[in-house]
Image (cartoon, rainbow, N blue to C red; front, side):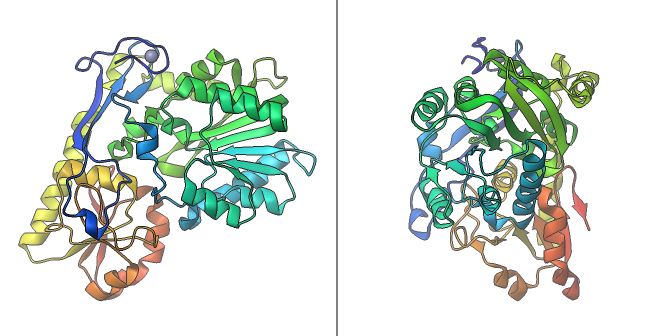
Length: 410
Ligand SMILES: [Zn+2]
């Protein structure tokens, strides 16, 4: 296999960053009628390029197969994520002085969770979203949405037909695209002179330092540092001029970029974050070798806890059928005997089964009825939001549990 950024040949044993065995795609939820069928499992192994330091999954399954029309993630079902989008819109409109004369494009615009705030401020905007069911939900909100994959060819075609845009943004999409060079070239093509790009992605520094191994899944092709993203953008004629550290997804970066000849000077936050990455050793091989042992410890602690609960007659159910939960449960080999069901707020997941573990997904009424002794909160990044929502679990003496970055009962 070759590095998807710099084409260096990667060694499948020497360059391993994390090996989680084999698992089905994290979003391949099963219906009742699927339970009699086998599931396709793919190796979940992540390599780090010794040349450019891109951390990447070693096999890229066909993009279209993973992001089928059945894809069930609707951004609007997370209230904290919608609030995050509104704060972003307030900040970017102010900083770039956007108004009715401007144009905005969001790549991977999902169900319009973000562009609805642009639209309500009278700013012309277009979403690009290849997943049919979320794109349809965005259109129902009155947001123009193009159902295509983004990249250099799309950017050129759009610029020629509809003109270039003043802001192009992509939140949590850069890590999800197989051809990362072509995707970033699309930004260059569609961006108007003087315009800005913003992208948000989980920060590799946090992933390693906080042991967030469950954020690794097949659909997540790349794991990114600021240093790498600066090199990636530079290779496509773009420069990074600012960076913000965000609390989303356990620690993300929002990077601001422009054309190479853009007039904005890099802020001190860019050099500051690069210094943090260097201090953590991200330019040295050892940084990319420590996560496996940490992941194994987290897995062992969780399995030990669940077995102990079962043996002492205490009940545990899960909360939040997110992709990261599937990585954790499948790596740990947890099945319905240890975790009989998982609750999720999304009606698109209720009534289905988690891929691999085949644990049923139910609505919250099932949790209230079961009155479990413990609720294992799988999306630890939404821990505070979920803890507030599940405050009633304490009424019957129930406790909440998180497994990452270490087993905590609270
Ligand atoms: Zn490389």
